[in-house]
Image 1: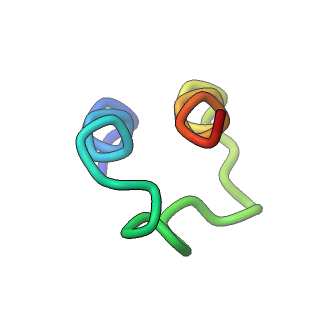
Image 2: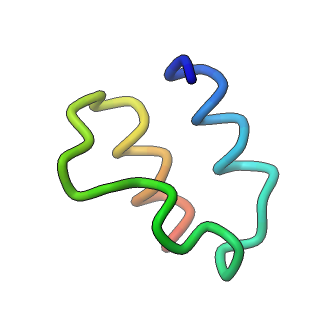
Length: 40
């Protein structure tokens, strides 16, 4: 999955349904930032 696809998925999916979607080993900064933003 591309970073763009991952970011869109994070934005469009309920937080409760994203459990385990972004692993701690994720190294794409944009994906990590989108994940952190989603969590508040």
